[in-house]
Amino acid sequence: MATKEVTILPPEEMGITIPARALDAYRFALAHAGIEMDEEAEAEFISKRNLYSVSFRELWEVKAKLEKVVASINEVCKHTYNVGGIDSLPPEGEDGVKISWSKQSYTYEWMVDDCGEEVANRLVEKGLIPTIGKILNAVPVATFAKACGIQQDKFMELFPEFVCGKAKARTLSIK
Image 1: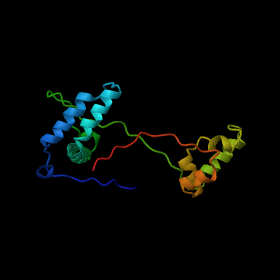
Image 2: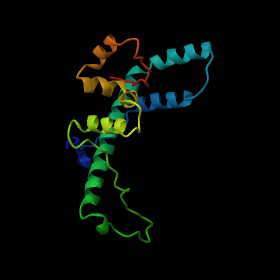
Image 3: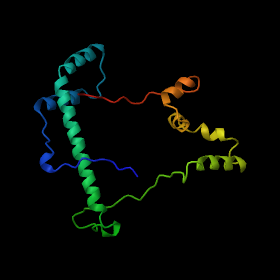
Image 4: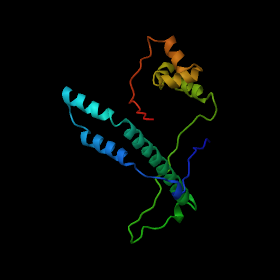
């Protein structure tokens, strides 16, 4: 099983300070968040926003540090309460603190590589599905391409009449 790398930060290395101009950029953005703008107001907003580029980069750097701190806190707390098992967790006390783990969940995988094919064939034999095509139509394009050993871009070039792109949410990057 692959392990996820997490950077553990000692408190003295957390270095969380928010520069004043980053806070100014945040206040500016906060004051305008969710406000409908006409063309004139939008143009004025864009003009002012663009003056804050360095400040927003500093704010973005603070966000990145905070994300690392949160990941570190999450990792050390999980480890702390993973030692000993569920029965060793402290009971809910008068202080109102309740520490618990969610119910264990699982992801399921095929025992060996060709199990999926065997299961699909048996489903068709038993009449539970009319064809293997019913299963294949439910498989996402990326998974289908990967299963075929073809890069997704190449797969889309080969079958442009069958594959369409749907826009995902964009990711903002400030460096």
